[in-house]
Amino acid sequence: MRKVLYITGTDANITRSEAKNARARMFIGLLLISLAGGLFGSWLIASVIRSPVIGKWGTSVNNPIAVIRSGLWMRLWMLSDRYYLQRNFDAATWAYIAAMAIDSRDPMLCNNFAWTLMRSGRHLDLALYYARRAVDAAPNDAYSLDTLGWCLFYTGRYHEAIQALRKALQIFPKQGHSWYMLGRVYEKLGRYEDAMRCYQRAITATFDGEDEFREDASAHLYRLRIKRREFKWAEKEGKRYPKPLV
Image (cartoon, rainbow, N blue to C red):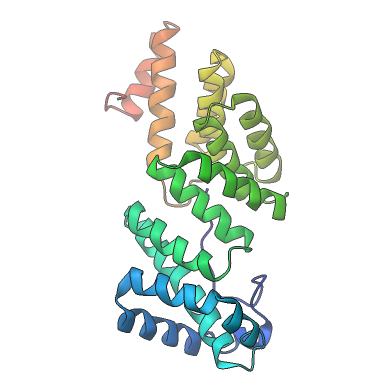
């Protein structure tokens, strides 16, 4: 699942001294984006800043290029998060691409990019690639493991998905996304009792603002109740989620 970006000094590519000037850097990044013409201009500036010559000159936090580079990087990341919350996955994807043109090593950035690609339903192999990169960099991060599990599911790697999602739930047992997707995997494999248990856990778990998945879990549980002719329990689920499952 997507992790929310907080402006702190804990980023892999931003030092504490840089973090003290976060507001100034964000202002510079926003100004450059406005002057250059939106996302395309951001990508263009990011490509220039990423070039070998400027990259070597801009490695020190005392150099202006380093200040612009980190400020623009954070601004693009925040812009991609805003587009994601608006469910504008195409714009969010381009904003992530521009941010990753500056620096693609941050595991949380890789995770969020993979999640956004997966949610858009396109470039699933690329989403899986970046999900694996995020987990390789942060193997005990429940969010990255959850994203990996989703990407594995949508690329047909069901048994690998189970392993990733189970590990995510060992770290963060209340993560609703993982319970929901684990239920989807079990349902796909015909393990209906396991799937129903996962959907039940998902309904009462945490979804961090994406409550549509809670409704989907209830709908899947309702469908399995009907399929197993558990009409009494299905009636309860129908009251919880009255809309038909598409």
